[in-house]
Image 1 (cartoon, rainbow, N blue to C red):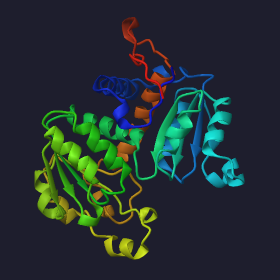
Image 2: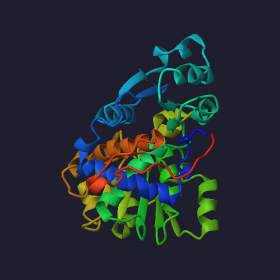
Image 3: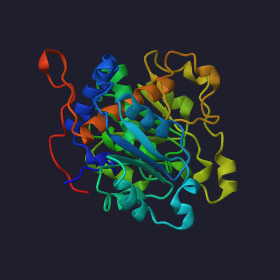
Amino acid sequence: MLRHILNITDFEKSELDQILSVASSIADNPSRYEEVAKGKILATLFFEPSTRTRLSFESAMLRLGGSVIGFSDAACSSSAKGESPQDTARVVSGYCDLMAVRHPQAYIPHQMARLATVPVINAGDGANEHPTQTLTDLVTIHQRFGRLDGLTVGMCGDLKYGRTVHSLIQVLARYPGNRFVLIAPPALQMPREILDCLEKSGVPCTICEDLEAAIPQLDMLYMTRIQAERFEDKAEYASLKGIYVLDREKLAGAKEDMIVMHPLPRVDEIDPGVDADPRAWYFKQTRLGVYARMALMLMLLNITVQGEEGKEACPKFCFEISA
């Protein structure tokens, strides 16, 4: 029975709590984890450009003492010769212990997981989901607030194509007391199926277009860029580009303890003048993502680490799931 991480809903809340705990342990005691994955190999198969996600995965495995193979561009792989992603999965399974896959088309990592003989981690599939970015986000939120419940969460920008917000809202909706403020123009609002799920679950949700009016009530603001690569109509993209810009003037209306997050890369939606504000957490977010991915890979590899007084610092996943 292989465990793959393809959707954020693959996790039970108890597992998310485990990952938060392990990531915190790694952050506090990084030297304890330096060689625990020695001899293990991660394959990063990135059919779509990436900086943070790919390097974060690779950094995580190297910090655990493992090794990394893979490619950062589909043009550097046999897919340029016509090989299917499914065949790539079969081949690379024989070379590694884990695979992290990013692809511009939705559900390609899911198809690869059906044929892989090692765990597959979805590192982002088109406009669908990005589960390990969500783990990064959860670790960041927990680091700041010490909890994942009772928060007013603003999401701003491209909520239609933004896979990061699709994953994050589904997880945070599980925690009691959370409410959402979705700030986007009608053309980029959250997909109807996600809004319907929130409504059925009784999760409070407000839809609006005005960032400045919404910001005073927020505990967390999750900014996203308008993604040019997701638009078939370039004129539509041009009309929406730059519609939201968080600057120091708008941030002045926010709570003193609010945090600003962003999956990055940013284009023009957060003014660089915001970077020095203590509420700007997006660069801390990238650092915490390494710990989140380290914790996840340890669990998928069933590696435990002995902590103080012989306690397991990294518990295994407590159940099995088939692809």
